[in-house]
Every structure is written in structure tokens, then in C-alpha cells.
Image (spheres, rainbow, N blue to C red):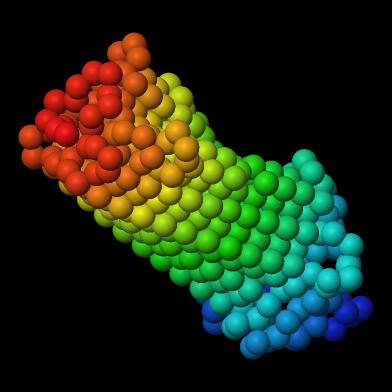
Length: 423
């Protein structure tokens, strides 16, 4: 098909890619480009980084296409290909392009100048399958995205991919998403950002499914993910990530839903060992586990801070988290938190003046429905629930909930009694 990518091999460098001899009528009404998801139209790219760069440039020039990489090849990029929003090793994606990785790797050479691997521009649509993105380095300090930048109006979809050992001097060590990003059955591991979002920083729309984000670190907020836009996470794990605040997940001014997922063994040098939500924002957690996280400051498992925020936990376990501040399981400050059919157990507040291994309410509203707060411990009483109600603050424990077995007390030590909480 003249004027578009077709099945075959990328032409050698220096040879015209297409010998168009189309009639004027054909030029006036070109055939549509192959569907990026149609593997039968894939263009084979030999194990050569220059040929990969040429193939992407050709696909952009002809309305998009599908590329099939050499099985298991490592395409090592030694120089940046484009500049714009920071340096990028491959041509900026401006059209619908699908890359069938076949377990290949695209990596920046360790001796090369700093550049990210992918940039998906406004109007670009990038689909990746079975591909590793490794060693990207965005040093711009203003843009972010060590492995990938998805610009506003751009879309990226990763399936069975690995994004690893990328760095950013700003946000999004692995990926900085300002557009639409979907991560499915993929690993985001070992990435770092000087600012926010060690694994992923998202100010756009983000969906993470059946994926793992581990061993990522940020210098500020969100060791694995910083969510500043609409975020959904299903069937995924955030573990062994680190940050100043929000070791696993940091939510700010946005709506985030977490379902059937695990957020565990994350750490912070300040607050929100597992999750931190800064208002106004919304966090809904369903059928998930938040466990083994550690915060130096308040909120070993979860910290919610700020007016206008809402945290809802449903059928969720918050267990084994630790803080040297207050609220080993949950610390709710001036916002609202609702726990339904959930368990807060075995959390610890271990600082010299720490209270409430289970739940702290600081001037907000906390409601427990059919929820158990058990086996939590604190240095100072109470070990279960502590509430400094402030103006308009309150804690409600319904009759189907239980606050028992906490040390040194369940609720004794509060200035105002909490109904249905004894001892």
C-alpha cells in the first residue's frame, strides 16, 4: 500500500523508505493506515537502535503503524533523537503507534547524555506490549518522566511491560503522565524522582491493573504513585517504595479508587507510610490490604490531611503498620473518614509521645460501621481510637463495630467519651 507502513522490514538507512508511484487520484484519497493493534500489518525492526529510530519516524510520517521488535533484543540508545519537552532518545510519538516488544528492551546507554526513552505528544497514541524501558534519565528539572512522558492530549497503553531503573530530576521517575495512561500486567520497579512520583506521577487519567510497583523512590511525595488526576487501581501491589510522604501512594486534589490491591512495606521519612491524601481529594479503598508500612511522622498506614478530603475504606484490612507519630493505622486530620466492614488491627504508634495505634481523629469526622479496631498499641493511651474533636469533629462507632484488645486502652484517655467504645 503506497504511502503507508506495510508488513515487511524497515528499509536500510539511507535508502528511500517508500517509492510512491501513486496516481493523483490515489494521492487524493489515500488508504487508511494499518490499525496499530493489527499484528498482521507489523513492520519487523531488526536489532539495531538506528533502525528503530527510523521505523518510528516513518510511522509518524505516514499516519501511524505497528512495529515488531526483534525477539529479546536490547536496543541501546547512545544519543538523544529529539528535543522539546526535555531530551528524548526516540522520536516523539505523534500518531497511533503500536510496538510489539517480543521481550525486547529499549535502554539508554549508561555512558550517554541524559534523556528519557519515550515522549508521547498531543495526538500521539502509544501502545506497548512485552517491552522493557530501562535507564532513561530526564535531567530537565521542569518536565519529568525518566522513562516516558505522556503529554496532555497523549495516550499510552502498556501491557506486560517493565519500566525500570529510570530517573527524573523532577517528577515521574518511571513515567510522568499528563494525558491518559493505562498500565496492565506490568512492573514499574526501581525508578526514582527527585521530586514527586518515583514510579508514576499522574496529573492526567491513570488506570493501573494487575500490576506491581516496587522499589521506587521519590524525594518528596508518592514513592510509587503521585495521583493529581483521576486514578483507578485494581488487582495491583505497591510495595517496598519510599518517599518523604505517601510511601506507596500520594493523592492530592483528585479522586482515586483502589480495589483488590495491596499497599505494603512502604516507608516515609515523614508522614503517610502507605498512603497520604491531601485535601481536597477523595480516596476509596475496597477489598484491599494496607499493611506493614512505616512512617516517621503521623499515619503509619494512611494519613488524610485537609478540609474537603474524603477517605472511604470498605472491606479493607489495615494491619501491622507503624508510626513514630500518632495513628499507626489511620490518622484523619480535619477531613472525613468512613470505615465499613473493615479491620484495623495490629498497628503500632511507638514514639515517646505517640497515641492511638489504631485511629487518630484530629478535628475531622470518623465513622465506623461493622468495623473492628483490635490489637493495636501505643505508647500513651488510648491505643485504639484517639479523637481531638475540635470544632465540629466527631467519632461514631456503631453497635455492630468492636474496639477491643488495644493497649494501653481502647478509648480511655480521650477528653470526650466515644460512644460504644469502652475501656
